[in-house]
Image (cartoon, rainbow, N blue to C red; front, top):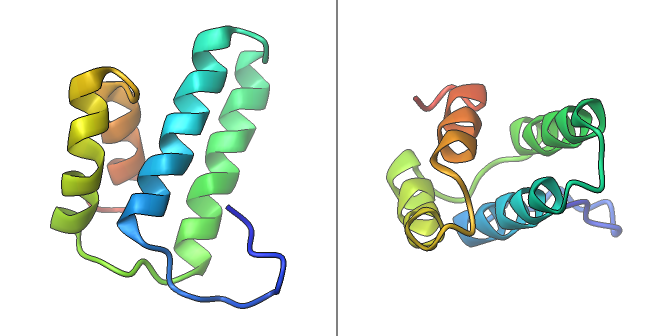
Length: 88
């Protein structure tokens, strides 16, 4: 999710959904240990906290809803993200 230009532009909810879907795919392949996955998730959350999210909780939920419904993101990951961001 890092922006190489160093610009701290707000992150769109759609981008958050893409990153969470990538995380879910990594988790599903089983190629990474749980502690590595936890660190990656923590980095995602840390970056979201350090940059402004260009949208509300409702916008984030709306962006994630189709991914949860299709199975591209688990309900647990969805809930964990919102909890970690203080939006639960």
